[in-house]
Amino acid sequence: MINTLFFDEVKRLNPRNINEIKNAMKETLQKVILSGFGKTDFFKYAVFYGGTSLRIFRDLTRFSDGLDFMLIKEISGFDFDKYISLAKIELDSLLIDYNIYNKDKNVDSTVLSRYFRFNMKHLFEISYKEYANQIINNEVLSIKVEIETKCFSGGETEFKLLTYPSLSQIRIFKIETLFASKLIAVLNRGWKNRIKGRDFYDYLFYIYKGAKINKDFLISGLKRFGYLEKDELTIIELKELLFDRFNSIDFEEAKKDIIPFIFGNDILFNSFNKDIFISSIDLIEYC
Image (cartoon, rainbow, N blue to C red; front, side, top):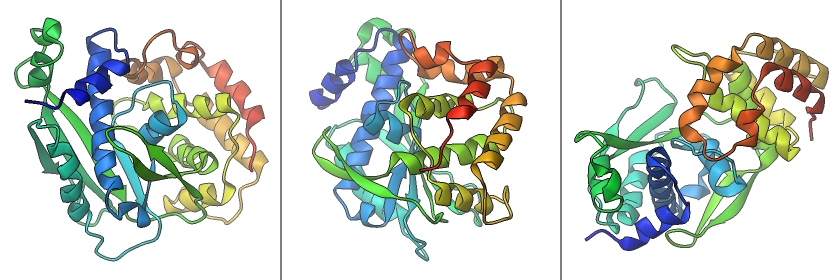
């Protein structure tokens, strides 16, 4: 029998349709996995960042996909699978069936990836039966868990308390460093098929919150990806780079990436157009 506290947490998120229920299930499972990491010494070595970090600890107004971590300092032969195995203990307490897949991009990659996969139809049959017939038999709820083993310099961290499924201390980046990490993605990331509109949505979230930017982390990250060669990036230069980037984006196309992750009457989504992004550049500041 599945732990009913899991579904109590899903319902606490107040999902109103089948897509929101799927996202609420995913977010609740993300918290369970994250809590499992928090019960080890994992956060002595790593920091939690990215969209799910924003969602859980900063009230990001959209759902998010995976769990992203970064080593605080480089560790040769870091054993990610040891912590994956320890995190499974928390997940196993729910009595939910799942599988874990190793999806490292290549042997030379600095990013280690694991996928937790759950049977979506089974989850609906034992919770939201009225929607179960809309789920195909082999549909999977997948949560990607990644760690970047090549760290950037200048990141500032703090600890936040995760309250579900148990109390756990989670190390996250401070908001100025998170904003810098998002700007690295906005400026540097390429796309194969569809623009990752979530990057631009999250950018607007930082602007909306009045966040400033960790300059050292931004420069370190842009240099790490080969986007920037020099050791300095003035605020004027950054604004010029953002102006050029925003002018190159089809924001109507970018919105299509966001739709599955939003709920309700979303202020940021409704403001998602080129004029808003261009105007936002004036608010960019280093801390």
